[in-house]
Image 1 (cartoon, protein in one colour):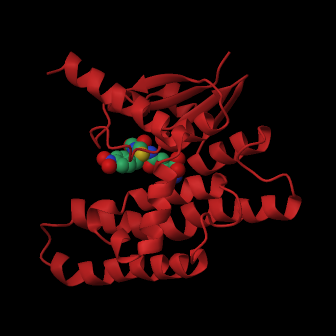
Image 2 (cartoon, helix red, strand yellow; image 1 turned 30 degrees about the vertical axis):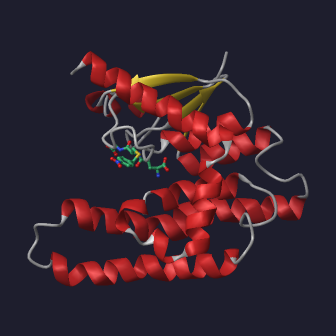
Image 3 (cartoon, protein in one colour; image 1 turned 45 degrees about the vertical axis):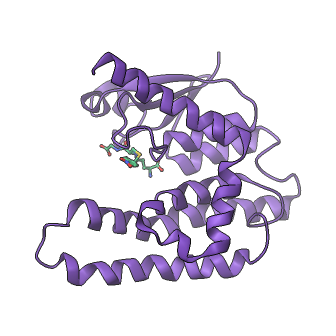
Length: 218
Ligand code: GTB
């Protein structure tokens, strides 16, 4: 039985590939493993059947042979650990690649989410204009550090790894802000990852779900 990944039946990003099921789809595409998708409506996320998979009632989740996982960092790590392509065999290089998975979700993603929340949820608050520059600067700080580490390298640590996959998907969420383009090596890094055939397949698959939903509900 192929693994089952949950995703939004109608993604609020309208198929732009920003919902986090893309991370799992992309990882599975990189390792060449077919998967099934279970699409969920918003109400279903908080119902017992899904809460049994995801205590926070979120997508994506991952089910494989009786194992049910939530949290994209852990799912992508699991996929990387059980197949050869996404984590290096050398133990030290593998440990460093895993550090980048954590860095993506724990160090870079929080200020990115804070910015998105500020723009989408707080734009009508009287203090929005005053707060926004500080929120952007917190993202810039992280991008500056990441950019300095990456330098002219193709990927964060040697060959493309699960760490790059996670980091790139976090960075993609910044594109509408224009901040990514302030760092040319990071913009090129993201573009390089997006050009990978596995990413293209993952992106196309999630877009097809959104387009099908549109046709069903014009
Ligand atoms: N830390 C968890 C992980 O990495 O797996 C976070 C999972 C998560 O936030 N999932 C979101 C969710 O299920 C969907 S991806 N939200 C419903 C809820 O919490 O009730 C987040 C997302 C949503 C929408 C856009 N967008 O429209 O651009 C982008 C990303």
